[in-house]
Image (cartoon, rainbow, N blue to C red; front, side):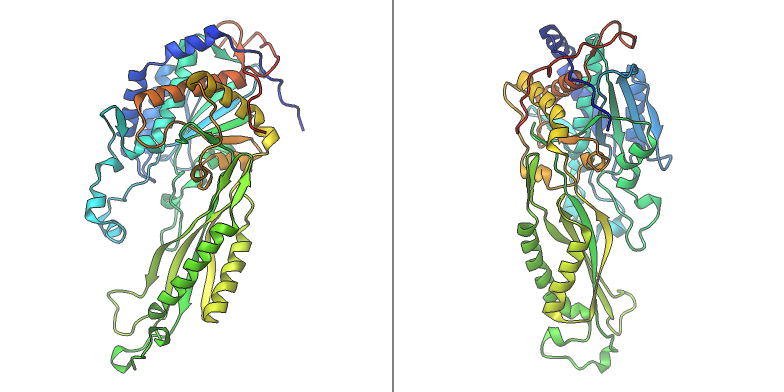
Length: 459
């Protein structure tokens, strides 16, 4: 294995001051609002991607588009690097935001009308000193922070020895192709950061998934699986039905689904305890929940149905493999109801964690940058941020040490965005190092020495 480039020399107080002065609170707020107010539900990220592309082009970050489909590209910009010195740091954030589909034939099965009409799904605004709107919280607020961080470095006249990648990705939230919902329109994570890693021309030493973590960090990320659990029965012409006394004796599997759900619910409670994952980089408590129930055909009534299915989402810690969950579910259900069912995995994405020693230089740089900006350590983020999928999983899967970290998740202020941008810029400078000479000259070598702020990572 190749040795890592040595730690970069100390960052001057002048450079710290120049970065802070180069971050305009109004500018970052306006960028977050402009980007956040472009509707970009999963599958429709194209307009937001084009906005980021044009912003990067205007600011001189040499963007390119790399996509599995033309209308859902990854947008990748760069700053610094090119001489083989310093270390490369990739920042990524996702363009898609959770929301209804706004197809009434689909949304009617999941949302109440008042929920669909919530303006925060696709609209962002500043009110009483804080930012509203789901797109800013997840994830175009953090995206704006690393874009402004790169601009601040450039504005301050600080070129980086290593390369800073700026990536806006589709599909982090989802969806997933399941049943008749198939094809590229339903691809999520396969065409986002994962596709970018394989086809995007990026070569990071470290990576940060920029997401709200309340200024903490974690290297832990959960995966997830979706299991289709089918319960089989018998269809009986309604006039011929002998109605049993108990629902559990009914020939239709729909009537027996209640008992199965009780079994799954208890299994899910035990799974959360059994799968808890504690590591130096964070604590994960993987959860489980039924996402959907399907049985019968509403317009073809008259004889009930032979099949009813539940779709169970199961969180997977970095220590859990998909086969373990399949075996556990099968054993539990068989013991409770006997035969007449089928468990099939229809989605599988494992969780990952970074090696503590390999990720330590990134954590050191982030911790010191946070101390310099907020006057306190960052610290390990709350377990909720370790208990979900975020795209640092993509890089840890590829043996590139990665964390997720970012601003206040819910109702951030403009000052929170500015602080996060400053932390990102200092982290990039601390890890990538300063290239001597003019911006983009890419000629002189950086000075190596101790960690720029001293070792502050939690051992």
